[in-house]
Image (cartoon, rainbow, N blue to C red):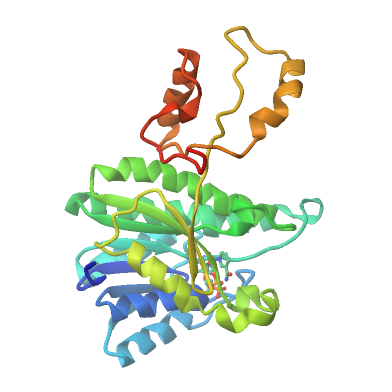
Amino acid sequence: VTARVSLDDRVVIVTGAGNGIGRAHALSLAERGARVVVNDLGGAVDGSGSSGAAERVVAEIRAAGGTAVASTDSVATAEGGANLVRRAVDEYGRLDAVIHNAGILRDRTLAKMSDTDVTAVLDVHLAGAFHVLRPAWPHLVERGYGRIVLTSSSSGLFGNFGQANYGAAKTGLVGLMNVLALEGARHGILVNAIAPTAATRMTENLLGDLTDRFDPRHVAAVATFLASEQCQLNRHILTVGGGRVGRVFLGVTPGWYGGPEPATPDDIHAAVDEICRLDDFVVPDSGADEVTLIQRVLSGGTGPTAGGSSPAGPAA
Ligand code: NAI
């Protein structure tokens, strides 16, 4: 029997919580007892304009008996991130978790992409994470506890035509997760990411026949778990949409070893199929772990699948 997921008294910031998936996160967290800081500047999908989206979600939470406060700070600036964290701590005296969900789209092919299409998207998704997490971090470290949930995307993890800016930002968040997970572990701070698919204004007309099945609440259940004390995962990416939940990971194939002398480009050309074959792999626990795996090969091991702490691929 597993313990019930509880966020009783926890103070959780959710960025971009005025609409869509973030709104579902906020409602779900509040239902599990969290005091929620509902952050949203309330702009359009491309980030322009503003409205009372955060206040509306706070009103919904309060009407359901929950506890929440609104913040209309933009996470696209360091000042906005600092104000948001200050609001949480001023209001509730502590901070336990951050779900960085705010996002915008400026879809164009690279050939047509302007500088501001690049910076606007990077500023909200990727720099936005730094803007909120840098001021949040000392509060988590101080209490020796924290949960951080970042929002990645299949568009970055696997690619999507016309989303170079967005895809880069979303996979940049995976790099951030990998490093913060290592830095946070000794402070009780666990850092994970989700890659959601949900019917929101952002995906209007994209999900086809089964659109109704992609309720953002499917995503909120995963984020609520990852933001809870019951979650012991660290450095994981969970993909969730329409009720299917899976894990996305970065693995390394056993590859090819050409001996101590530097290989020639022709050697690589000849070995390229063996290098890229996916029938076996490992999932390193860190960059240093990958170096250890290489060293094992150099010192005469049979390859990175020869052992180690990493979960092995399907053939092992
Ligand atoms: P949405 O457009 O409904 O919600 C995004 C919210 O972020 C909006 O309320 C917006 O006002 C807010 N926001 C934008 N810029 C902000 C800023 N500078 N400061 C504070 N808030 C800001 O979109 P949706 O679909 O709910 O997206 C939520 C997250 O999930 C985003 O990070 C998105 O990239 C990601 N995602 C969504 C997918 C989907 O299938 N809907 C697929 C993959 C990722």
